[in-house]
Amino acid sequence: MNQPRKHDDSNHGYVNPEKELNAGLWTLFAGATAFLALRIWIKLTRRHGLWYDDHILIVCWVILAANNSLITVEYATGYVTNTWDDRMHILINITSCGTLINQALTKTAFGVTLLKLTKGWQQWILWFCMGSMNLYMIIKVIFQWAKVCGKESYDVWYRLDFCLDWAFREDFKIGGNVYNIIMDFIFAAFPWFITWNLDMRKVEKVGLCFTMSLGMIVAIVSAVRTGWKDEGNDKDRLYFWRNAHSNIWYSSEIVGTIIVQCIPVLRPLIRDIKTSLTSRKLGSTTDEVALTAANLFPPTREGVDGAVERLNGFPLGGEGAVDPPGEDPPREDLPPTYVPEKGISGGDPGLGPYEYS
Image (cartoon, rainbow, N blue to C red; front, side):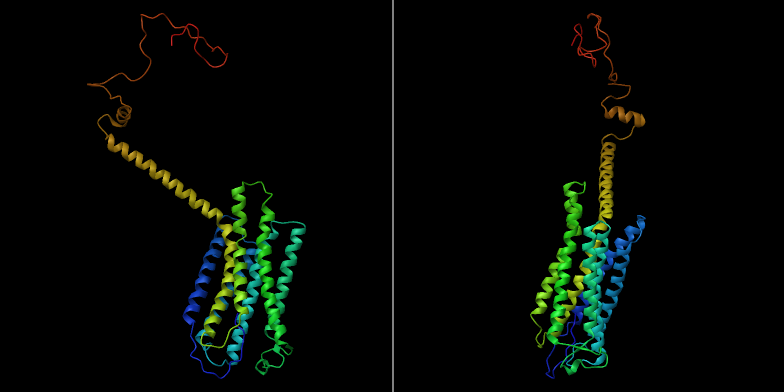
């Protein structure tokens, strides 16, 4: 998220990161689009329908597209300059608020998903997390448009008619980032409590918990980004380069939260692909066996039956023909064999006392 700053009059040969910024933002957006499209397609084609969490994610995707577009416009129309006009400040504030809203909404979507899987006190915890997180977001959005006490550059017409202390304003923003990280860890831990006592195989249980807990990665990314931002951003030639990196970091948090919610829904698709590949492999093996048999025993005048007979080692009539396997002809030099109806144990037929082995 970019913070509006009144630049000094120093002239730097700033590095323009416009191309790298666009590559990072829109690559992340393409990933979020692909995963969200697969999630919606699977739910609709399998007649599950869309629920509240799906609609929230769609809204997040729209906000992400709009925010990326505005950030692209910023860098294309004078962001990397020594001074900013009111138009640029307003664009920066709008994209900052869009990032704040999307951070909260993407996490809210996951909380709504968890509401379907929980009951009792677990739902109360989820409602508290979602409510407090969104309340924090609303306050941060309001503060984004507030003036700063003692700073003339913030005393402009498009800001709200109250001022905040600069230190309090910055600390409140950092607190919001830390709170979002805590929410990521809490939401990522919930699937383990929900699924651990379910009647499932342990491998499936661990796999499901792992896929639903990928938000841990988002939390780690957010923590690294927050620590990196706290180091400051000196006004040197790489000032805007670091701002662009900050934009990509924030976008990756939002995109990551969308993607980790789509991965568990892809399990049926992955299972279908695996089944299809297995069937194709079995079909290919069967075709190879049939082709090998055809090459070893080409069809002759006796037809398919003859090929089968010859495959079993018994040619049809003619020279070299033998009788097919069956009962041996009776031997007149041996006495008749006595075969009892039941074996010695009284169960299945077995050898009787007078049977020749």
